[in-house]
Length: 95
Image (cartoon, rainbow, N blue to C red; front, top):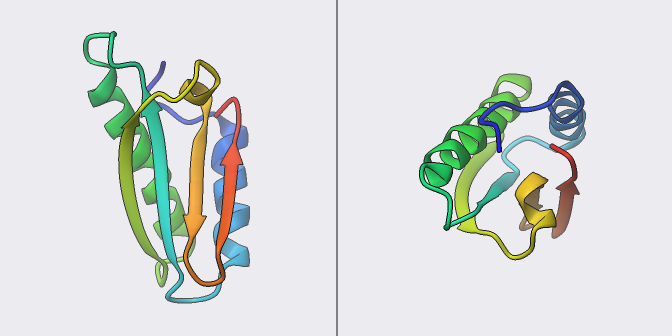
């Protein structure tokens, strides 16, 4: 797992941010493999980069972050965004 975002993911995050209305609360989740030393730190850096991309694109968003243990092998390459109102959940794969 890399701490960097792919160009495609960065572009997708920007597109999503542009579609959201001001003051929307967005939670960005990145998963890590708890068996790999240092994976949590990499995931934290990665989630911070995703959050920063959203904030730079639209600074009126309320962006929260969370780092969670993997739920599947597939989840390790995903970034999940969720909003409360309106309730939406989006998953970027191969991020």
